[in-house]
Length: 137
Image 1 (cartoon, helix red, strand yellow):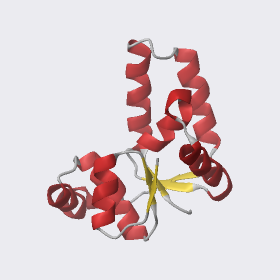
Image 2: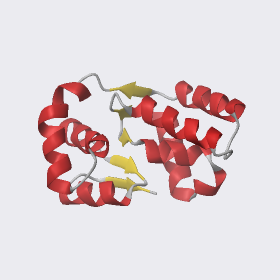
Image 3: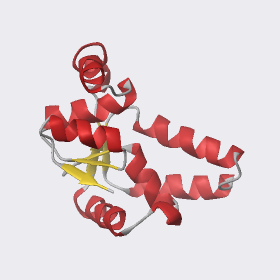
Image 4: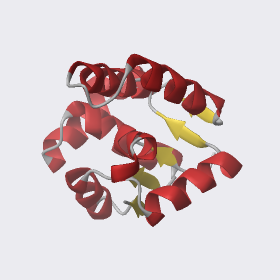
């Protein structure tokens, strides 16, 4: 897999007002090369779409169709995410003042020595400080 994909980037692909040229380029890369995600990724995506439906930003049909599209990508769930939660991930969250959820992406990128694709400014800054290549949107 070519990079670690965070939920903010994947969600930008779903909403036209959030997708720019950088997000489109990363989506195109994911279609060709695939991506790696921590085990919380699907939960984060589902949670955002759940609230988008409640706020009438999208319909349930929109969410279902887009989840099917994301499912067709070569996205590999990391099976070691939980093993690092109470150690390295928690330490990274504290060191970089991130949520533990965001720190899971940084921990995975560091462990796998992969770039990180994110739209989250704080996470991208932390990745830069940790010498992780950032594919930013």
